[in-house]
Amino acid sequence: MTRLSSSEKVLSLLKECVSSLPEAYRLASVVSDTILTLACESDSYRPRNREGNLGSLLDFSDCSKNKSLPLIVVPDLHGRYDFLENLISFTFASGERVVDLLVEKKIRIVCLGDGMHAESRARERWIRSYLKYIDGVIDSKEMRAEMRENLATMMCVMTLKMLFPENFHFLKGNHENIMNRMGDGDYPFCKFAEESTMTHDFMIKEYGGAIVSAMGEFEDSLPLAAVFPNCVLSHAEPSRSFSREELINARLIEGIVGGLTWTANNDAKEGSVEGTMKALLGHTNAVYIGGHRVVSEKYALRQGGKYIQIHNPREQNVALVLPNRIFNPNTDIICVN
Image 1: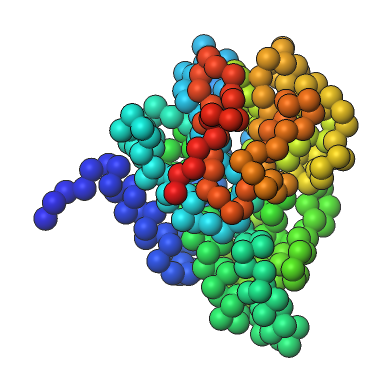
Image 2: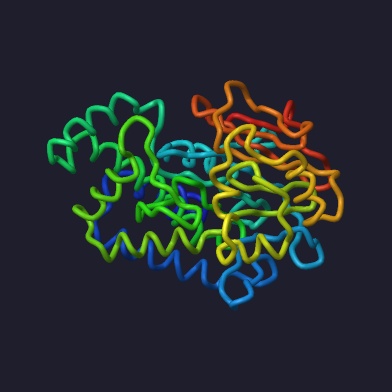
């Protein structure tokens, strides 16, 4: 029997994540192990908050603490597990594969959140699911198909986090709300149906309250923003300027979670991007990259071109941010499928 290389083992593990709805014991184990992985993140890039718990900022801006590496920024996934699979197996023009670079710790990947809830591509499926849901059918075949995609995506995310804790990161988006909470920056999501409520009810029926609570703990352990020498990242456009201390202590200060995950176009204060970059980097010679709002092309510019939106759900595009170079969206956004 041929022995798989480390990279091939990674790809094989991802394939296992997407074969079917995970069994309860397997999902519980992966969630538990990922929570532990997050709890052990190094203070060198994830400073603790004022209560001594996980802070909400990934800080890779100091090259004396953390080596500056090429960075891949992944927009909203929304159940597109194949997007992650294609990214990890992607081969650059140089011949280097992303998976090999991850194994060798030569690259970092940051996902901008929103792992769950297929949106426009599954509109009709959501509508059919909802019509059955209001008749009392929580686990219709349409909902099971939706949740297979959602959980496959999150199993891939958690597996990659466990395998590459310092090099693979996932920020919280507004769809990371498995508990269907209202408040503290979380709001139930409704677009084509009652997606947030339907997801919560399916998870309770299929897996039970303990696993759902554990997934909520995982979401609460996720960072909300990241800073690198030449870019800042969060799921959504920052609603106002945030200081480094505010970002570290985001979950202890009212308004910051929502201000990094729910901001609509034209709702952010002008200058919020440059103000946040100045607070984190001491300068504004950088870019701020986010997802959340859909763009029709490769990207859209806001706030004088300093804020770059990259979430096009019809494409599998990622942003490649190279060290010692300002990101250029015209050349540095690449398709991985």
